Image (cartoon, rainbow, N blue to C red):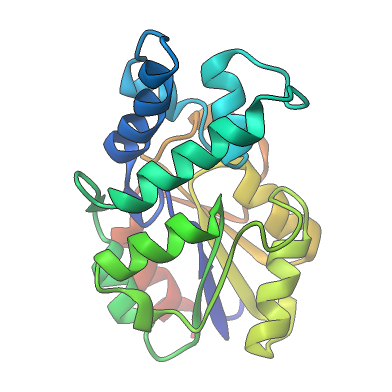
Length: 217
């Protein structure tokens, strides 16, 4: 297992615990439409496939529903205005980013680009990442394209790119692209589904990532 020439991180549930801010944005749209707000843990279970699917699940709509684009736009607008009211770094995130600062780092997320950039800016983390692939930039994970786009942008062979994520979408995207798939427990996703995606390695938290990178360098 070679060490990474670059590392691409998922955002929600991997680098940041954004559950409460995602829930606040989703519940704002629900209540403004006369719906009952949902428990943040329920909303967190809807995360992973992009904002349109999040809204569709919260409103129990088909993804083709004609009212979905407006509802999605309203969620993105609210969330962009409140990007990190409650968001915090996941355990080990800063340590992992610091330890891997000698190689190019990227974000590969299904989160809407506008919100992704606002979250990184509000956390003072924008300069840490050489490239960001987010929702709206192309096909979403689990497509291999987001990971391939990162490899192209960072000019590294995709086989030397590590993809670090907490959900099956991250692992499936990495494996489809031919990257090294690192699963991190403790995020938003169900652990059974995470393991079913067959990551190359599984970590209990990002606190273990620096040691893994050192051991393979």
